[in-house]
Length: 113
Length: 117
Image (tube, rainbow over all chains, first blue to last red; front, side):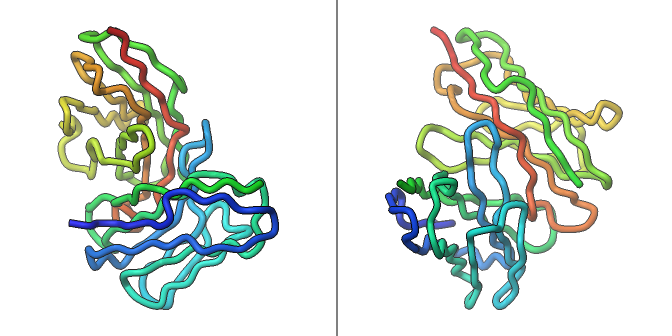
């Protein structure tokens, strides 16, 4: 069972560069989301999607874009990286109804220099 | 708006001693509550969840948590700590009254557990 797969695991960017963090799930979950993890702050929601073609902003969306063209994939784009975006990024998926929990990927550790 | 407060960013326990991690939440609707564990350089793994059934919830690895509505708490306990319990633990809430349990989680700041031999 692959679950939620994130790539890459590690990335170093220079300020101003762009990149896309990839996320794929094979559980046919409608709901997918991106969080960033910073020391002492837990995980904070960046963007989320309730299905293909539908996305919305979370708590900390500035500097990030998302799209959802398929049920399986939910990439996160940094258009112009800033040092403040240095963080660990987690993708998660869950069902849209019921009491099922969120499943998390292994994370992407991003450093912006 | 929901919020989660975890008391203590670091907890040190001796092997074999009780582990107690505190979590208080606020939610305007009956919540779903979760405890996740994160081992070094790994993702989050679900320990247990409360979804309005039994108030005492048993999870994996000997952990359990009790939902107390009057205290808005969901503290995590394990009677006897093991070296393998060293990790970071996160409490999370979602407003289950409006959406599915796994959607739009709000996390506490996390508690890092150190287990001393």
